[in-house]
Image (cartoon, rainbow, N blue to C red; front, side, top):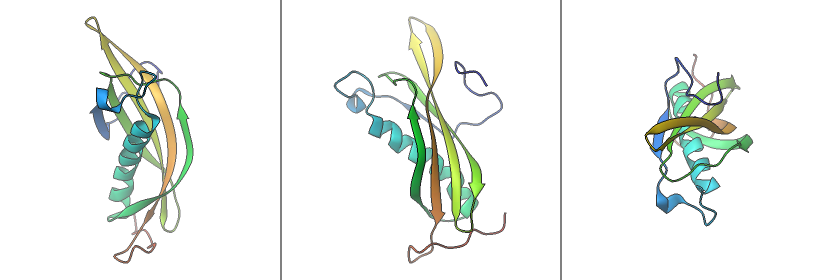
Length: 131
């Protein structure tokens, strides 16, 4: 996969425009804004696999490779990369499409790996259902 194009043959989990209200004083998007979108994106395949609610248990890694700017279209891809008895590990890749002067460029901006835990109605860990 190229660093400067969206992955082929993969469906994005979420796409979000970067807005001025989420900008930090340095002129790029707050890291927390990106982290929140990564957590949402990662939870989607985890929810589907768990067939019910999940909670974020851990962030194994989080790398901000390049900044995201106002006007960028942020695209998140997420895939399950591991499972435990109650947990699901998800890798999330984030790309920014930049539209300037009629041209669109793309950059991989963030990568993260998160662990989610399936929970029951009492918010206790529960075993994952059969795949």
